[in-house]
Length: 453
Image (cartoon, rainbow, N blue to C red; front, side, top):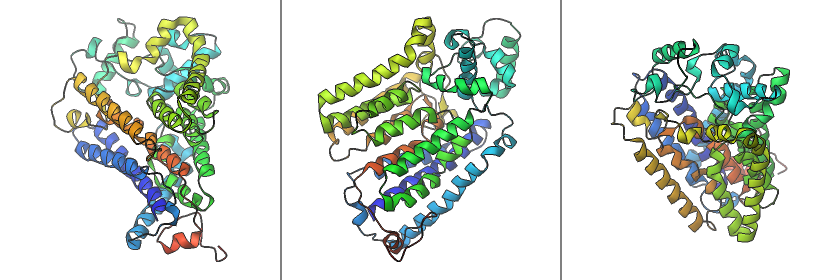
């Protein structure tokens, strides 16, 4: 049946992203290793699969029959196997330190925690954060930073090696010259910092907050899905192993993903604009999704309601960020616009990876920007023209243009299966009993056929 095929396709795309992410980390750590081409192809194929899975309205999909039951059973067998992989990542959460000696897996986690500590002390994190003092206290080094193409790195084209990072870090951390080489400001809006304040006060590991946000987001998707499909949706959520693995492995992205999932799932309710506002007040990726949310609202409820939702979302953004703007508007603006205004190195798992590690020539940054902006414009036009026949398309295509960018970090894509399953959970799929699903070759770890169904 098409409903189960959609869920399986999303899970397989998430499994593909999982393995692509593993290879991506290996190649970026050791650029001499092959695999960049495979990563780009795999990520591109996963994006295409996710887009296909959310096309159409989904009306009555649970009542359709499967044509190739053998293929259906094989797909769900693979999804169930990958669900065990996803569950194993949850199981290993308390032991993550044995794989990575520090909970500060990247600079987003590290800088946001130091920013929260500054807030506790009554200081402006966008102005007063000291990168070297922060990293010294956390006992981490330049491998957890974002380097910039200036200062000691001005002559570099490709991302600096570990030795180059260490050498520049030694110079700047000793007080020689001004730090021009490493991003030091928090580079996200205020709600990426404020929720961490209690954790900073109590000295708790913020990674548990991010995992709790993931569990909550998964729970919201399950709550919206039809009852009979919930075991399959849960299997799909876990089978899309990239969602769990890279959250448990260290990602602050769930702070924006949770409210964004809530906003998309219940966008027929006006309060969903509050959730959208929380998402855009947390991370800039949510800014890309906001126009697609508004397209669906305008399509269903008219321009006036779309305008109200936009005002509500902007009010949440303003209310949470205004104190920092009043504190020091220039520092806040430079922080939030860091991904745009700072000269960053090409990096990611998208098209640019073929140039940085795959042997193709590297184009000027403006070329990748043009591709990214052009792709986003195409996606917006497509979402508007197909708004009635494909109302859930925006949940996925909003992020697809990042694949073409100068910075196409893998972190932009690993949560897409979560958003896609949220989109499918909204669809009027109908319901299914386990016996019928089993007869069509669908397998799940969380339900067994009931004779009374």
